[in-house]
Image (cartoon, rainbow, N blue to C red):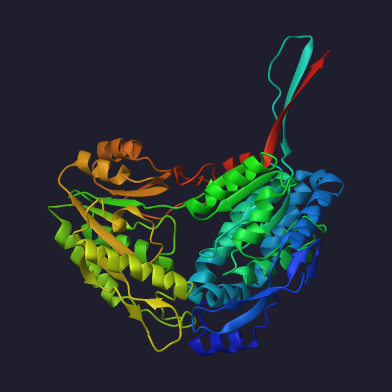
Length: 496
């Protein structure tokens, strides 16, 4: 479908008839009659009515997951059998790839080609990777005294509540769901109310792939109601959340107020991207900086939103980024020629514009962009935006904007660059551009971030863990380390 034309995607969109029913205990459930509209940021049109979960629907989903864990076959299957089920899910995601990509593009605004090629590739790869890993893990038998035997086993933690955001709806859902299922857990997934339709389709495909009823349940609704009910539920054993730091704090409180469930958080970011004068290729560094902030409309927690450039090359690099921004094609997400689509909705667009206006009022200089794009489309489009003369104390440099807005700060020496990079409450990711191997090692270790990219940005695969430090959260998605979130260690001591 990568070679599909704009007209072909429009035709497919017209034929799409998404269901907004919850998926609980292996079947679609319309819920208690409450619903909300799934509105496309592409043109403001309603895509579907989505069931809006209250406490009763969350209770039903958790009860189904509890039964499936306590007395169902899933945790008792061999790891190889669970792995084969995950591989079947991956196969169905591949079969329905175009439909899923189109759904994601319509509900949250990213270019359909990015949804098809990048997002679906990530989701499919995640289920495949954990499907293949499921039977490769081993328990331990430490050496003890001759008259005893010790066993250390990894056992599934129980019912997992997974609450995920809208910016990469299937990728981030897969990062939670696939390792939890591989470990033998059962899951209640709550997507963002802005991206419910693709998550519901994932739930139905999992049932089609042969997951027993109750193993993967999907309930839709807003955070203060459905998310809160999952966080407070005494039968949820583990909570995995990706989203804002403010909401992450709520989930920690919910755990304290309920059953002290383990809470794993992947939160916000204000990632620095440091370009030194000895970068191996300044033009490539600038191009990557522009790609990093404008990809996915800047709606990424890892977006390199703070460009820290040595003063000796600052103007050259900034001008190159500005040229890239001006050349970027903002357009209909269903047009294969579009490079940047719509922001997720009008409220979010207004928030991003408020940050830009506030930055200018504080003294930052607008180099390009800063306004609504495609004003007659009915969609929530923003011009790619670059501001320089940004000072560390400004909101532009401190707060996560979650949009295609780049703040350029300058420095004069390496110590200043590291201090600026670390001068944030977040610690999710960072970038560094240098030709000096010693500098690369020393600065990477000095940066307080869960991931540091050197002479690249947003590279990696499923073999490496992903997560943050400081107020960017705890725990890790991806890699075998993700299974640590969904398992418990048990020691068995046998006296011989």
